[in-house]
Image (cartoon, rainbow, N blue to C red; front, side, top):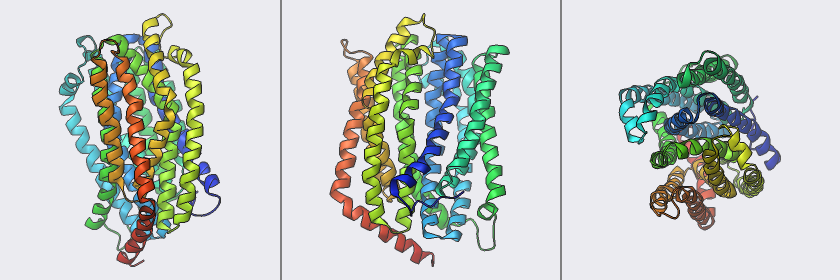
Amino acid sequence: MERSLIRGPVMTSLVRFAIPMILGDLLQQCYNIADTLIVGQFLGANALAAVGSAFSLMTFLTSILLGLAMGSGTVFSIRFGQKDTSGLKEGILASFALLGVVAVVMNVIIFAGIDWIIWALRTPASLSGMMREYLIVIFAGIIGIFLYNFFASLLRSLGNSVVPLVFLAISAILNIGLDLLFVAVFHRGVAGAAEATVISQYVSGIGIAIYTKIKFPELVRLDKGVRLRMERIKEIASYSALTCMQQSIMNLGILAVQGLVNSFGTTIMAAFAAGVKIDAFAYLPVQDFGNAFSIFVAQNSGAKKPDRIKKGIRLAFLTSIIFSLAVSLCVFIFAKPLMSMFIDAGEREVISQGVGYLRIEGTFYFMIGILFLLYGLYRALGRPGMSVILTVVSLGTRVGLAYGLSAIPVLGVMGIWWSVPIGWFLADVLGLGYYLFHRKKLLARSSDQSNTRQQADGV
C-alpha cells in the first residue's frame, strides 16, 4: 500500500495521500472531543475546566513525541525517494531507539513532578483535585502515543496513509464507547474519561505496531549489516530535534496562555476548553495537509525533482487558503450551536465567551493554513530551523500580546483571543518573504543534499 509521490498529477497525488491523514487526525481529535463533550454534559463546567486545562498540558507533552516522529518521517521519506533501503532500515532503528528512550524518560519526570505542574498552571484550588485525578491516568498513555506516532510516521513516509486511519478509526470508536461506559454508567468521573482515552491509545499503538511487523517485516527485521549506528542517530536527531523544538515551543506557548486563561476563573476556563477543541478540529485538515505536503516535498527532494516541488507549492497554498476560508465561514455562523454541543444550554456566560473566542479565531484560519504549509516546506527542504523561527515569532507574539492586551481593562480576555491571529500573520509574512528571497537557493540546496547523501552512503 505504499504510494510514491514523485510521479503522477501533483495535486491528485497530494490530495489522495492527504485525505486519509486528515480523516485519521480528525478521528484522533475524537479522543479529546469525546472527553470534553461527555465530561461537560455529564459532570458539569468545573470538570470541563479541569479536563480542558489538562488537555493543554497533554498536548504539549505529546508534541515532543510528535515532533520527533515527524522529523524521523522526513528522513524516511528522503531515503524512500532515494531508494536507499539500507539507510531507511537503519534510520528506522535509530528513530525507534531515540523515541523510545524519550518516552520512558518523559514518563518518569512527569509522574515525579505532577504536583508542581498543577501549581505552575495556576489551577484554582477548587479544580486541582480533579485535574490531578485526570492527569495521573492520562499520563499512563504516553507509551501508547509513542508507538502510534512512530509507526504511523513510518507508514506515511512510505506513502501509506490509509492504515494509520484504520487504527485510529477503531480506537476512536472504542474511546467514545468507553467514555460513555466509564462516565455515564460506572460514574468514574474525570478519571473514567482518562481511562477510556488511555485504553484507546494503547489499542491504536500496539495494533499499528503489530500490523507493521506482519506486513513490512523487511523494514523492522535486523538484517546482517543493519545495526544501530551513531551517524544514523545523529541524522535522525538533526531533523527531529528542531522539529521537536518547533512542536514543543508551539504547545509551550499555548500552555503559557492556558495559565493566563486560568487566572480569569472557571467560566473562561470552560469556554476556552470547549473553544479550543472546536478550533483544533476546524483547522486540523490544513495542519494534516501541511504534513502531507512535507512528505511530498521530501520524497521529491530525495528524487531530485525541484520543478515538481515548485508546482506542488503553488497548488498546495491555493488549496489550503480556499479550504480555510470555507471553514471560517462555517465556524463563524455556527459558533453558538457548536459551543452548545459541549456545555449545557443553561451555562449562558460560558457559551457567550466561547462564541467570542471562535468568531475571532475562526475568521483567520487561512493564516494558520499558510503557516502549516511553511512548517512542512522548510522541514522537508532541510531547514527545520526556519520552522522553529516561525513558531517562535507566532507563539512569542501570541504570549506577549496575550499578557499585554488582557491587562487593558477594556479588552480583558478578548485581548488573549486577538493575540492569536496577529501572531499567525507576522509568522506568515516572515515565512513567505524568506521563501521568495531564497527560493532558488532552497530548491538547489535540496537537490545538492540528495546527491551528497547518496555519495556518502555509497548509493
